[in-house]
Image (tube, rainbow over all chains, first blue to last red; front, side):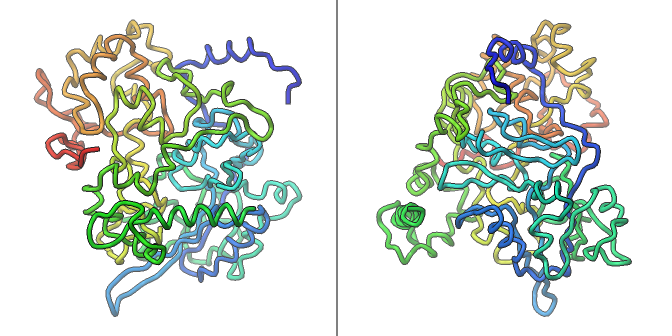
Length: 221
Length: 265
């Protein structure tokens, strides 16, 4: 961080940026999650591992396993959609942040938050179409998944992925995931990966970096 | 300490929750009715559309009382912070929470007439999908609280290509004398007539400062697409519908129409 606060420089930058909107960072590689909606048994081990790693009290959940149930007997169905932060190509949270606490990393496209810069205005929480930023009422700050950036730097995978006993959750370069080319137990040999499932917000809003192996009832169109 | 805080919140919430059967305000119900309150029909369609702000706020009062921190843990002062879109002229006053920016700050009071139910269409306690499970309802978003399509109405991209501008508004505003009404005095003049906006006030301020227009039409952009506004007919509108507008509705969603007033505040 700069040691001097150059207020004049900041004011100049504000003037220059007036009426301009945020131009997203184009990462060298975009990492993202893949989740198999069908084989996930909804044990929520990923959620717990995540909460453990991030020291979260009851309330905020960086990762959310969502149960979708429906149908009429005898044609009933259930599947899971599992999301944390989707590390969007064009994140909505980022331009709403008044303190610059949210940033997108150039090397891997991870959207990270430095919660020590957060003033708890909760705009990012409102803007995210997928509910990723989570408000922690204990310290009045917003926090969110950063894809366990420290683990990534150390050449390992995030806690949620490591905790998944069904191996239905994984990470990788998102283009490889969408093309089902990533070598991962989360994608079966004949399975196709989709970018959107039912009940999920329009992906054109922010272009989330996530892929799903969808349930037949969760397919869009 | 943490436990005490959360217990306190819990008790406040319990004591504020709703009783079943009829509209009952906070303070009249007992702790064991917590679950009952969560599943109260008022939290679901269609009753949610009849819910008044008074009823919502009787339990959810904290959304108006909450303030941002004076400074972040690392010492960033709220008074010195500025988001991208807060460089617009329309932004004034100290940093506020988004609920207050939509309901009680001067701009919200002057130009908007938003109710809780303008954005909130009920909160499913199970958060995932409609209950009871209903295969016909596929538009419920996994995001829990608010459908982002609602946000998109004022937080979308400025569709400058569609309007035939040579470039983004930041670049072409000088060409158009920084005046939206240069064209829009005659085009798409039937606008803003929805029950969550104050149309007259918007039109009046729009003549004074294009930043007011741009604020909701690109300046406060969260998302990368523009909202496909309904194409209300206006005086002098061409008979032929352009290709891009063929799928557009010509009326606002029923719940936003002025004829169908939302429950009063």
